[in-house]
Length: 321
Ligand SMILES: Cc1cc2nc3c(=O)[nH]c(=O)nc-3n(C[C@H](O)[C@H](O)[C@H](O)COP(=O)(O)O)c2cc1C
Image 1 (cartoon, rainbow, N blue to C red):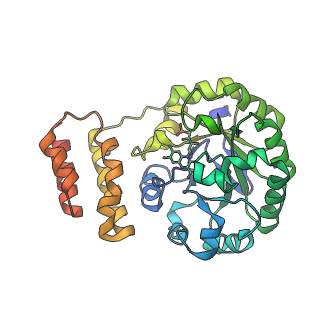
Image 2 (cartoon, rainbow, N blue to C red; image 1 turned 90 degrees about the vertical axis):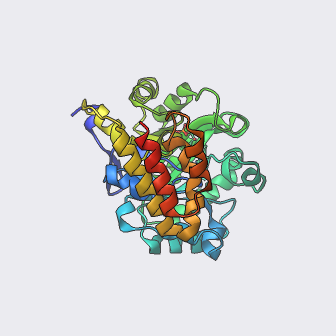
Image 3 (cartoon, protein in one colour; image 1 turned 135 degrees about the horizontal axis):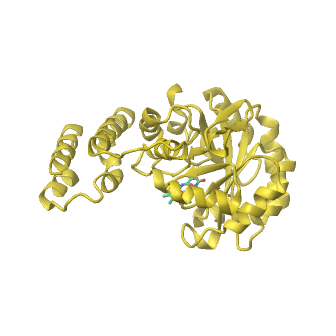
């Protein structure tokens, strides 16, 4: 069996190599449901929530509302100490997720100021304590998402520490905190991480099509690929990559894009209520990207107040060809 035909073993799970990565504000339950129409068995990450929010139901409650069809599902958290971890893990396990991921890659200023996110990569004793504590609470796969480092690259050291603390798989976005989300990902560092540990390694950063996936494999030899921005308003992306990696073709048709947008809109309104119409707006530009500019129609989409108005506007847009 070729590398691309094999699945990744993660605890009791066997998952395809292309994984739905986390995007806060984007990879919510409605989005994951639409992804599932295309990919039945891919692992899907949700959005990062601080363990304190989960433990105290402040902002984290809605993120624990998901449907069985979204599984296998990775619930992602951040933490800056062991506070709230026990209670948060109890709730997450009770909700029935498949994997818990700790994000120590987040570069956001408000997150690193509190000592969580990528700041933890520069505080290894604290990181070790937190990882061991999570491991004790969880009887399901526990994964870690890292960066190249905080201000300096130390991903290999962090990866070995994670493995020693019982982490089941590691995702690396090989950029420093200072680089945020741009600049060339450090393929060589990802390769060093892959060679240094035995647990599965996932690569995150710029995998948007089959060519980039192949390049990452050649350069790093990693096991899996987190697709984040490449999947934004392209819920078929994991399926597309899966098909191409098996030597099959995959056509992105106009009808498919429109139906995905309509389903995504309907799922968003069903989940959030009428407010969903406004929440969905951030996805619109991507769904209609590359369509001929039609300012009157674009305006119609922007001012739409109801699901019906927005859905009709979308249909008109796609009818223009
Ligand atoms: C708007 C936005 C939100 C993100 N939210 C998260 C998040 O909640 N958790 C996380 O681990 N990474 C988050 N990321 C980082 C992505 O998961 C990913 O590591 C990064 O964007 C590089 O991969 P990509 O080129 O496939 O997007 C976010 C990135 C962006 C641009």
